[in-house]
Image 1 (cartoon, rainbow, N blue to C red):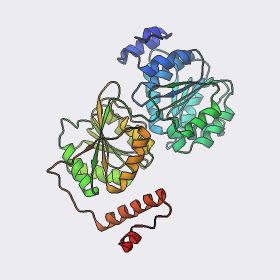
Image 2 (image 1 turned 90 degrees about the vertical axis):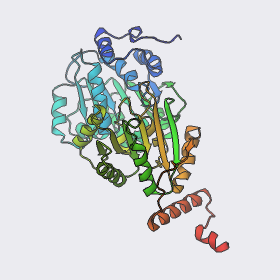
Image 3 (image 1 turned 45 degrees about the vertical axis):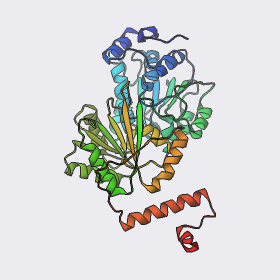
Image 4 (image 1 turned 180 degrees about the horizontal axis):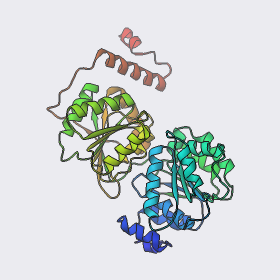
Length: 417
């Protein structure tokens, strides 16, 4: 099949083509070229593509074309996404594409009062974008009519599995009409997602833009071996002092406490403007921080993995993994926040001795070695605290025991000597 060179070659109406032109889209990406015609043909699709490859438009445009114009009061298409941030982001995308239509797009999610969502649905909705939890909650109240639903999209399916949404998804599949078109999109395709796809898709066409769990091609990766947390902080400051190169940065941490501490430290050092997002932050705070970062009002966004999926920002110069993720697929998602929409990006990971084990597992998953860079010569290398040394030693022991159940620990090794 010859490549599709423009959006005019798809069977889209004038309203959608005008919106696409307004958004500055010129040439369809690979996932869009492959998925749009198949979805338009009514087939079920599994789309496996990195974040930043245009996968949202790959299902959104044919979906909007199918729903076409406002009709009745009940939803005819549902997009399910794992987090509030992603729901808000997807609804924004849908409204941008549907700006020249009269389609009603409603976003619903947890963490805010349910009454406003119930009222919005009662006023009429064509496309509902929702988290699985809020969908179920409104349905059980008897406030969500489902009989007209003809299309169901699961976006970020891998994250849904990580977050334990399978029981809720099964209930949703049971209550919505069985005669519908199902679409599943995911950046990675672990076994859990494969089982999910077997459960709710019938004879799907699988469109795989890159092998599962490969990293985005426009992202160059680097790794620094750093002895402890104080040195990690020093290295972070050293890098961020180069404001020209590091102009729009996302820093990922494993825990909320680390995220908060880094945010406060960067504020004190006046390296921002900076904001922090994690699950303890209020819904509006998170959305506002995301908007500010997207509009260029922030230089640095500090985030945990839970909040990472709603971050859809072009021209992120760097992703810095302050901690190595222990859910290895999260590494792919984190670094996919840079190198988006035909831009180049860089992902830098700080690794202490206890995190080396996880790096080996990540390299196995992504099927490539991450280049190791030497620490800058003028960097202050700090001594680890007694507590941190103990924690790292215990973690290394745990990893060795996992690899070899007969391993008795560092204490026994010292005794033998």
